[in-house]
Amino acid sequence: MNNSSIIAIAAALAIAISTLGPSIAQGMTAKSAMESIARQPDSAKDIRSSLIISLALMEALTIYGLLIAFMLISKI
Amino acid sequence: MGEKSEVVIKLFGFLDVTGEVITMWIILAVIAAISLVVKLSLKERPGKFQNMIETGVEYLDNFFADNLGRKKSRKYFTFLASLFVFIIFSNYSGLIPGVGLTDYVKAPTASLSVTLALGVITFLFLQISGFRHNKKHYFKRFVMPIAFMLPLLILDEFIKPASLALRLYGNIFGEEMVTEELYHVFPIGAPVVMMVLSILFCALQAIVFTMLVSIYLEEVTED
Image (cartoon, rainbow over the protein chains, first blue to last red):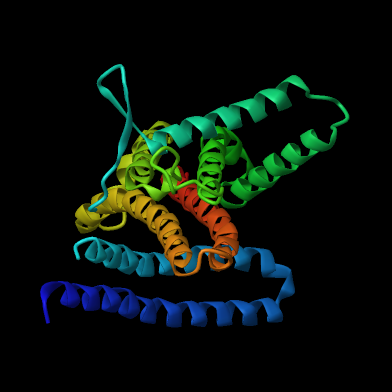
């Protein structure tokens, strides 16, 4: 294996692994938000805004991985 | 970040103008034109166009009031709303066909320089408005519950704008890259899938950015 193939594998791993954790967390967040909306439809508005914020904060972790992957790809 | 900006015009011989700057000029002209048209044709009974703009402003007003309270949101409305309008216009500018293919027009928020500039502006805004709101509280906030958290809290002030900038840049840049890759795979039809998703994500990123800024603002200006 030469250098650029190792970098390609590293870039793939960077985005793949950094997707795993946040996706599980986002699923759990969405699940509990849906449950609370079903239980209390009146408070759907408040729940929705905090849901979006927490999803965005988790999304940021994946984005960091994506940035690293792009940086690695530009080095091939 | 390994990002190179292509200088397309040398203004007056020393000002480097890149494609992002040109797109920002266009966006500014469009926003200014819309504002002027609405301002000059304000009526007691709004027409279709004025009604649309009023609905947008009202939505933003309620949106910030949810986080900040009506009084504070009115006070800082100009900054927060212009941030929102600028970000959403620049995000959507990447969806116009042809933008990003040449060096002359590029989506501004897909460049780290632009989003970092937004982060620096936000940082200054938060510090200055927190200091002007309540000088005693501004310093007390760092040491009040426990003093040994001071270094972490100071670090936090710098991490907030940096993470805002990186999130916006990563999302928009990632979208553009994925759309471009899909275009290379299959030019007709394939990019549409990502572009439809982008319509949702672009609005979401603008909402998230301003929402986080207003939450940080609530933190520094609480009584």
